[in-house]
Image (cartoon, rainbow, N blue to C red; front, side, top):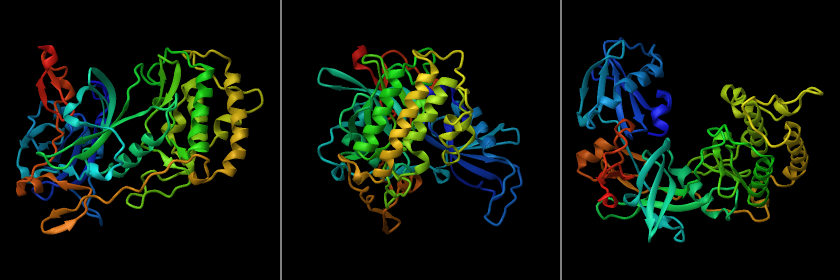
Amino acid sequence: MGYFSNCRPDQRFSVQRRSFGQDGISPAFALVDWDQRRTIRVVAVSREARTDENGFLDDRDDDFYFDALARHIDHLPPDVIQINVGPDSELLSTSCDPDLDSTEIANYRPHSVWPPWLPTVHRPQLTELDRLGLQTDLVTYRVGSETRMVCFKYYCTGKNHAVIWHEANCLAKIPKHPNIVPFDSLVVDSVEGGEALVVGFTNKFIPGGTVLENVSRVFKLKYLKQLIEAVDFLSLRRGIVHGDIVPWNLLIDEETDNIVLFDFNFGAKLGWEGDPSSRSAFNYEESRNDVKLTVFTMYEIITRDLHFREELYPHEIAIADVMDLEEGEEWSKHEDVRLDAPVAEYRAVLNEWLVRREKTDKEITHYTQAPEYIDWPDAPPLREIDFYGMIVRMQSVPRQTLVRKGEKFLQWQRPGSHQLPLPAGKRLLATGEVVDDEDAA
């Protein structure tokens, strides 16, 4: 279904940790399957694991474990925690032993520490329609007689806790703008009537596919001008950097015929060093400045040449790589690309903008220098947790620990894409639960 129906194994799975099997010899990888939202240990049985000074030296790369899990994941019962595979990734055995469980349960911040003016929706009210990517789903929910279709961004491990805090606060504070996707609601959930916890947020869904996906659509010159205006609005007036302007983070709103920028998880406050609790959250990196990324995005849209970003890191590319060409040399428009003006006009708009930004970027180097800058608090401390008698603030807790202690926790596991669509009369909630569809009755 959606993203996971066609993605590569290394896009569907990620490594949580490396270890050894129960024999102390066979290498094991704990892998997160973002489609089913479950963690499974993959043990390469009957292979001697050599160790280096850090403890690990396996001659199989990550792809072996990704491919092995991809081969078997859609045939495993939902309670399987570990699979043991042979040299050719054949399935030897499985285990449901909870002591082998590597799943981490996120420590969510309570709703009480979030701005009280933000609207909320309860996760069990959300119905999943599609899977758009890692921890991003297309869902619907009702507000009175209205049914809203929105994107749900969430985290079910502890790693994104600071990013979610900053991205949600940032989007909620950006004034309504025709070229920036608007914030919708915080998503809350609770364990058996306990305090409300924030597990993610929603923003408006704009149909039609991204600029990268919808290759038959004309990319108009006015879209470039709108994108430039949006970037200037964010950085020069509000002190915000998007940080990830790429063709796949741009939409065309067919109702308004406007370009729309979305996905602020690489966002930053201009010139800010980052959240003290997580320096990678909303910290500004000059190499990811929006002016440079906009130039490369236009180059990629027109030429379909993605090699710069596929082969190089952001700090390894410069505007001059695509703008400072030899006299008479032009961007080579891909034969399938449709524009409503000559390539030279797109280049001229960019050149004029670069001249203007060269001046203003020297005047505004920190978000607090922007005339109408937006700001919000650092991420509050995580909740204190009793971890074997120690009161600590952890990003996540091992599920096996909670099971042993008899404590309840938020569930996320869901049916895999291969089981979808559901039979008539059923619907899938954002919790992963399958329920009767009352509307179908």
